[in-house]
Length: 631
Image (cartoon, rainbow, N blue to C red; front, side, top):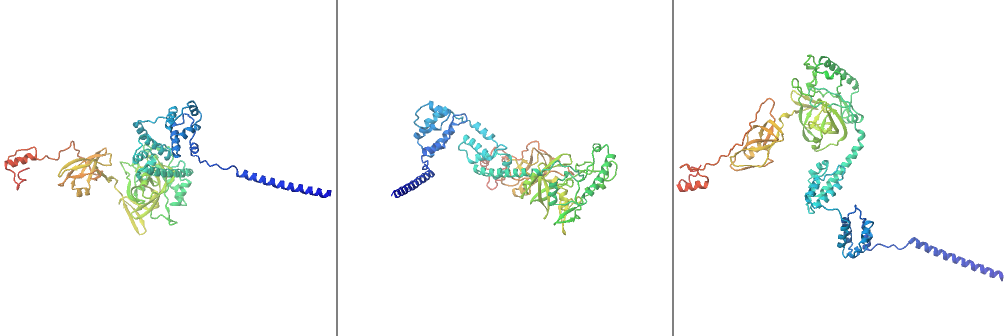
């Protein structure tokens, strides 16, 4: 009995303990779930609280602008539709430091937001906005984009000045102000686009700015390709005006030319040594026999002539350049005698013209370069072909520039800097030729075609026939030299001119020549045929781009000449002719006044009305013979 009761007590205790543990687990699980869920999320739906959260704190320092702070707060309040009471009730929570002290020391009950703003701005005065329109206009005109300033910062800075100057400024006026203050490199690209609105200006300027950043990064990556100071090899030639010499070939420079155009001969060093010895003998002869003329060169070491390869690469094969026969006899100096000792092969005119003997003359040929007709100078004294950067920008298909700095020594012992290499396609008539030309910023002409173009493309220079020639299979193409002395310049009126019937006038005209003592004026054929205005061929003198010509209206109706009408051309006379211009000393009256007099009684009158009244009264007037009664 005792055992049974003890067993029942033990069973009851186990049951209660199990129930207690189970209940405790349920309670802990509920607590954990409640803890994981956390407190209920409260979404800020109060617009007043949202408004004050968006407003920055005002400290009242010198850097804080009370006007801008109030403008921003007012915009937020209006957007969330906050009334003046809610604004003024909580505005103090956005004040710190000096601003909070001011609010605490001035317990004024403001009834409206406007009254509070006026008192607030009196306590913390904002910077004054200038009302001087002349000063604002001067600031706008002097505002220029900095070298490191972005288009974005420049745009909004100038836009703020324009709004202060005139809030209703038209878009085209604001665009003009924006374009005028741009950096020169951006202005050159924006001006041809003729932008009309500030938004269009912003888009185009940012596009060009992004392109500049990409190109600057590209140049920075190619810094390692820049060449050190070159070693110069002077080349002497008797038919040269710009003898740019070939620098010492660097690894990248040499490989670039080798892969694109030509390869050197295996026996290059042997032939180079022979050329050096031959040139050294000539130099030695000059130093011995011409001490009075070449005394400055006696202490200098002899210079080696640059080597012109005799092989070229054509269709992937190395062929002998049998057709590169340069018929320019000026390259063979052996037939000329020295003016000092009479021996052959020692006289050398070089790149500087000699007025006494064998002067040099540039060869100008009109060729199509990338489909644009350009007057190119063919210079046998220049080792490399060089193109001016402005001429390169005129091409329709502008080639990519491999940026690579280089320095050349010219014939007058000055330096010629180049910035890169471009591949040009040059047509002689319809036959294409190619050359890897260097790009120069300061060059005396637009394009110089040197020995690299002459040799690689088998160009023959025939000075006796004044032309260049190229063999293309069984065909022969010839391009004549251009007479650069006969370059013509258009002549246009300076201002609009109104010419009466049968009137002769002397009018001022303009030409793209600064000053010239004697030029030959040739009237335009279309001008004479269409307008029937006569003007003679004459010699003129130009001063500051202005001269005077005589025109005569051969029509029975007045004629009008606008400023863009081409009246003719002016050119320089040939050296074999002598022309002297006849300059008018004063304006000649070429329009004769009408003689208002009667042919019968020879009485003169001041007006036609008085003359006709006299004819009626005297009976001299006849409807049949009107012309017989008056003059």
